[in-house]
Length: 255
Ligand code: PGA
Image 1 (cartoon, helix red, strand yellow):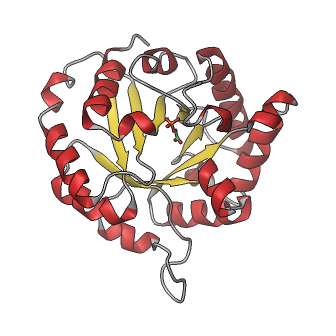
Image 2 (cartoon, rainbow, N blue to C red):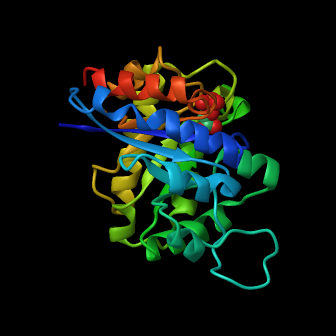
């Protein structure tokens, strides 16, 4: 049985009250998809203010992630979230280097690298986001861009660390635009990412997710690619009905 990751990145959506409602709606679902073909790893990444509410109301089979974290554990870092504080909550995953953090908040490969290595030290699983923007795609430099992001983001990461993270291929031009990459594009990037990871010392099994305008209609196509093990979904994960649909479609996809 293969595992398919269906990770939801809510971004700045779903207040604590809305999160509680989402979790209650979702709690009724599991029996409908647990006997299906594929095992699904369902992960939701709420805004940090809603994380604790999510912990308290989530169904037991749902895993939680954070959308970002700082690399220091405590101290004079106003406004940041600590990775050790995350460990006190029932959080297993952390998205690192999302393109919105890179573009809007000036996140660099260097700080991404510090975050990745800190998370691995604490046994939290990073979901490292990589991907080209529209100009880079037009210039035909998609693979060099991804390669550099991986090399810089994973500088000094141990072999054990490399085997304990997820990579999300998220072409920036496909995020929130309704214009997803084709399954073939995602597959080629997935293959390139795995080869690069192997050249950095990782095992070829490193899971690669695709993200960018994934919806219940196209999820099956992405997860059935040989080198794509799941999806990272923004807009269509915010509402419990459409997230349920994503889980159901993933569980039925032919791999
Ligand atoms: P989207 O976002 O599904 O709304 O395109 C994906 C993401 O940013 O992870």
